Image 1 (tube, helix red, strand yellow):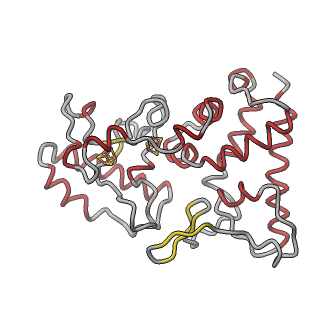
Image 2 (cartoon, rainbow, N blue to C red):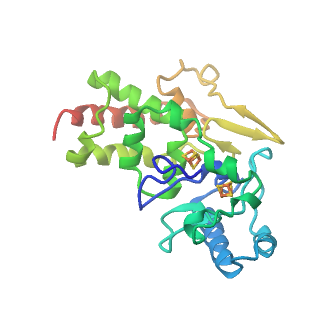
Length: 264
Ligand code: SF4
Ligand code: SF4
């Protein structure tokens, strides 16, 4: 939860997903921003009186998506510009004192935990997300969505015939823009229904989670080559035309990336 490369890659973003950041039924950017902001303000007020802090922030909690995951009350904004989400108990913000021992997970786990993205994403895949996603809300959603990153880059790599070279993003701004527009769908995707209790490919019923499926057969379709992408974007399709239109959006984006990859 504090490893520099993926958790805090630079000064304009960071991730707090494994501290329970998104594990709320209401997990829009606006709602999470307000909760993180209030926690940081209250932490400054009660610095050194952590039990009072805990009581004060309890009122900010919302209904959880998945009961089993702990939503840590010590996750807040760690910079005054609200660009980076992080641990309010970390030594960097407490004159070198590590206060994480009082947290639910305890100091050792907080210090040493590495989510699967560290191991499962390749160096190139990590570099693409870090280069293209420059805000905490979207960054945390994407760097932990291994399926989406691999599936998207896999389609591109099939088209260009090589492993995606992240250095191209530094010299080819048109390429970067098209890929950024794809990643923005993780937050704004027309086929996601906000009322559905979905988080990427997962949906939640009572205290259980399940993996969602798209019922292509019922809609009179064969499975889409973009099925993994659709699921990661929490798509809920009611009509055949919606699947076709979503497929067109993804295909056009990937085709543009492939066309731009060799230019610039
Ligand atoms: S979810 Fe992964 S990348 Fe994000 S803070 Fe936790 S360990 Fe770091
Ligand atoms: S105490 Fe641990 S779980 Fe809580 S915000 Fe800090 S690192 Fe995350």
